[in-house]
Image (cartoon, rainbow, N blue to C red; front, side):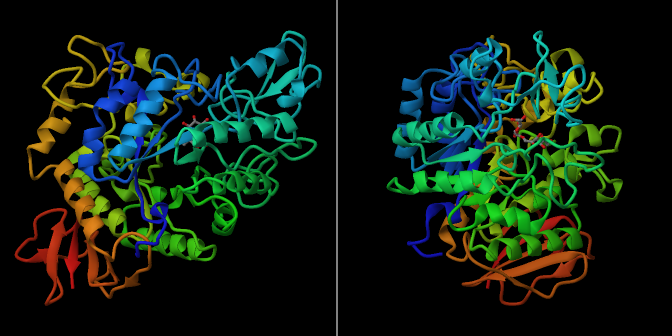
Length: 530
Ligand code: TEU
């Protein structure tokens, strides 16, 4: 990596799920005041940027992914002035700021949808008159049909919750309004946007049935990954490029086919995208190697830097996923893991090794808040506190994503663990075992996950081999992974091989766990200076 390399090609970006990060005013919900007070933690951690989940006015039916005003701040989170102060303070600490834009749908409380309900400007959404049955067979992501009927007999489309009506991207008002929103925040110093469900937006003309086709099937789909969506991103890229320095985008796009996924990353479209293929890969040497190779190939084809993601606010925390046997066929959701035996010590050991892996791979990486504490999933939240629309829309059969959204433990030995002022009640209850995972306690423990993350990120800045670039696979025992990067760096990771010796003349600069008699044992990774 050279000094001329744009920052986003190597960035480690920290995801702030704002309602659960830090609560400044004591109402139980995280906010901008809390985030400003904790910026020091992020600077000390050594990340390059933060991505803040939606903080706009919202009834919070889907945690802010139901936006009612794209150019303001939800009062529970703060004010526009506080947002400006946060951006300035983050920049002052060398942290860039990325916001989250939600273009597929608005909240049903957005003024446009209210107008539409009153019969005005329905062309901004997807309305159809189809009599007593819905216009087609589309299903909502959170369960149930994707159409809801209004009292006047018309139907509106919502690919997510009923409170999230889909916008009509064929409409000129919609396009112009999002361009204005981008400029609004870029003018306020925001460095980029994460684009929510970037592979949606455009729907096939005539809205044909999906039929037997599943979400992740290859081939054309009536509402996922339509070719026309790329025009929108070319326009957005044009806007981002008029700024100095140019603003950047990261796509959230669960697109299964490598070549289709890479199209979002062409030089005149989006800069980066979350690598969900890697997030879903099982903890085995062949599965990880396959995913890494595929990732490097697909990104090289369009000249984009890969990203590496272990967790986010939509999946079960990876300590708990890795605590399960990779042969048990679990998915990424908590619901797919319930009832499968877990060994959290094992999951933690693997999570430590996984962190060294992602920070050594070419490109950028994401840290979801709490990853750096090694926080496990909260698997047993009481049903009456569950808030994810998945829980409601699945008729209370899927618990959904709240288990990875529990407010962060900062300090102390009892709730609210420094999340909010003493005596405040976090919006989701924190289990007593959070006491073992507070940032305060881990900062004082050289053997903690936090200490490992800090060391890794400090080294990552010092070692010229890391960040953007390439790798060369090394010859290692079956059941292990090894690669070298120039100049003078190697990573070795033992997944399930017998303990093996490190190469001669290599100095261990960082390791995720102890070596046993100088050998690299299972579920351990080392960084070597060659
Ligand atoms: O997620 C998009 C999406 O497709 C998710 O439904 C994802 O497939 C699922 O959560 C995996 O478990 C984005 C946001 O990240 C999510 O939080 C929102 O609920 C959703 O969009 C709607 O805006």
